[in-house]
Image (cartoon, rainbow, N blue to C red; front, side, top):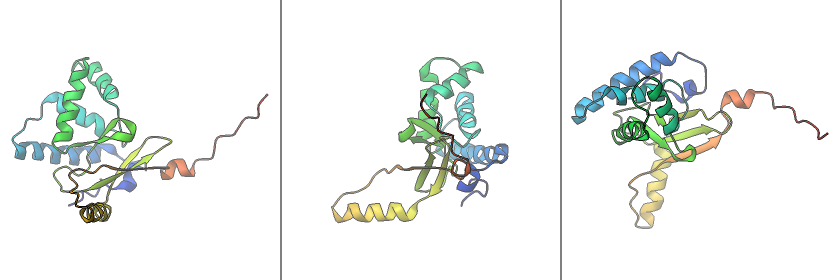
Length: 172
């Protein structure tokens, strides 16, 4: 089931993030309860921070926000929370950016592709089941079993694509 507010189109357009955040947080809480885990205040706040914008954030950006809100300023605070979120399918690690993004489909079995704007660093999580199937088929032909896939595509989002190019200054 795909949440209607978690579409890639919304990630690249201005919209009410609180609506996205509320639905994803509710599903995240249910996933944690089902897994027998505990959503501590720092874990919840780290997820909320990731959900506030549709872009990937580095661990130190999350740590800075957590520290400013009284959750602690030591790197393990953010890394442990982010690791928990990734392990429980509530966040994804975006390797290209060495950053983290909230999973927009917690609790769903899905194979996302991450569309990363090279200009503004916004990130959209889009379904990629056909890509995953093709990759698994190619791997199977070689006797290889795929255990984990992280597909990232770099390009320009609609906003950056439509923006006028910055003027190039002539050398003096």
